[in-house]
Image 1 (tube, protein in one colour):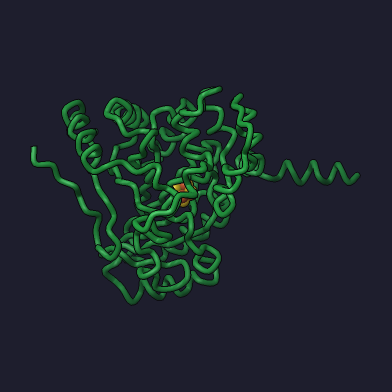
Image 2 (cartoon, protein in one colour):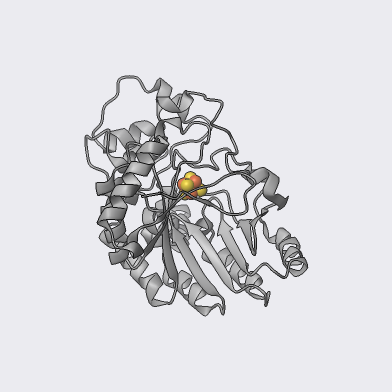
Length: 340
Ligand code: SF4
């Protein structure tokens, strides 16, 4: 009887949430799955102490077996290099804390506010600039929506709400629907922008219910997916992006330039072409935010400049993302211009 009840309960959980529950959280298990051996995991586990390994099965299946340098693996595997400290690498490299106006609400940019909708993700990206963000005190819970709406009323120039996190698509369908419906009640809000890795790392998250929620709001929905490598864009990912495009979602991509992952022109050119085939426009190529633990992903400015020059020569203008960097306290991204 008990088993019957458990089976019934399990079947009520949407398949994407079950997939999330079975994500890899153990370094040894991930490495075994990838047929990789390491004699001593002590430093890897040490690197994972404050920001544990998390990677979905679906994402891990796109990694090559027996390849330590797989570009997807490098993005998620805690590495002893993370233990190296440097004074230029900080816990809050983009100035989130000074921009916080109330729990879960950041106001950095003119006309846009950012809502930290959750601290949860489906994957832990080792370069994440919020890897040390205090989510427990700074996520927008239902009870805080009133203060967010009040803030909007006091700032009529804000026309866009950015849902960030964590990853907003880890919220259940009902929570996300509630959030979008509440924000949509504000007549001044024209656009709701969702920053998410889930279409990439957990394509099953794009459910019919989610598509219904996104298509039924009167507000324009923009989704910024965060893809860093063409190997991430499997056929499953392409299909869900197409379904989002079909209901009228504007799809943009931002990429972080990551040493040893995508810091070469060939990969970035391939990524732009693949994104376009997946109905998505390459939007930003971000220099790494200098967060503690991510120093091994940093490229020199001259290398970034060189790679960018090469991709400009190889791509049509509409497939060249803007090369940018975030500077704390600035109200816009700094566009890095080239002279030639
Ligand atoms: S999905 Fe986004 S918020 Fe989550 S760890 Fe990756 S970069 Fe950070």
